[in-house]
Image (cartoon, rainbow, N blue to C red; front, top):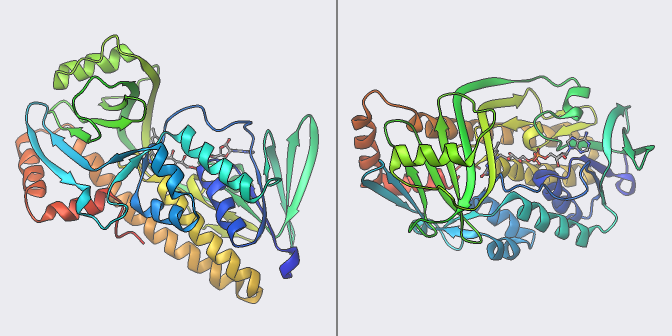
Length: 382
Ligand SMILES: Cc1cc2nc3c(=O)[nH]c(=O)nc-3n(C[C@H](O)[C@H](O)[C@H](O)COP(=O)(O)OP(=O)(O)OC[C@H]3O[C@@H](n4cnc5c(N)ncnc54)[C@H](O)[C@@H]3O)c2cc1C
């Protein structure tokens, strides 16, 4: 392995693979991204971008594009459905990123794609379906299909950024273990008919959690806890539940997205093996309640790019740098998953909701408010 042959192939051009490509290109490391889709995802799914990621975006000169594209959430309100229990003010966090940004995933991927292509115009190979990985002592070879042809790309390492069902991880035989939680949710984006403005709200009625987040273009995301997985969510069902639990009617509003999901915590036993490295959901999945998964992937991408640039200079210390990346990222993921579990527990149906209300009131109306703001904004993980 010498400096001028050092090359990375990234499988998956989702939010994490694209950001990894940006970090590597900024360090002058030759890389290519193989992505099966032609265009960024069409849906708004991942929304919350936390200060820790905005700080990484600042270091890679993309923060301003995100700041222009998203809504700056400065406050999170907690409501029991009838009364306000308290609020978290993110403005008490350190500047300049003393808010959580709400940016739809299609916009996020668009910004990351454009930025990666500006740094590395030939680097993104789209409509490329990776089918197989082969490794030897010095290189990894990615086989992929594009335009009806069987092609391959060889590099020093291949990084699986190909999501939670990662082919790269499966082919390298890395075990992915974890837990499925009993919690299930439905969510939808609706025209905003509230007076909540740019605030996020967590409603804690006794029948189960409802969350509401602002979106660009006068839209709002509604996330509703359900008793079991709803296979085919409808706008009508979300509207009936919000009406019943918190007396808020979403009927006949413009609706642009519907989805249902259950939640899990999964982690790969190791994030590197021979010539294969893992990042993003391919390496770890935490519950989306709290909106941390994509942000965790970006932290991992940043750490991995740092480790790879060190290996490029000191190849003899390869294992040490990769272990450093893995241990640091595993620690961060563990902490984040505990926070996500806590978020889910608070939102579950309660036998005695009065105790939950007392706890939330105490948390939000005491000096612990700042601690809560830090936890919800993913502070103190790194
Ligand atoms: C309902 C929901 C809401 C969420 N909200 C948030 C949030 O607000 N904030 C947050 O931080 N996280 C959130 N998450 C988590 C977030 O969606 C994921 O953590 C994030 O998408 C992971 O990014 P990734 O790039 O690792 O994987 P993915 O987004 O899964 O991207 C993988 C990419 O790899 C490509 N690919 C896969 N296989 C191949 C192959 N064989 N060949 C070529 N390409 C391939 C795919 O096309 C895709 O583009 C949410 C998750 C859910 C389910």
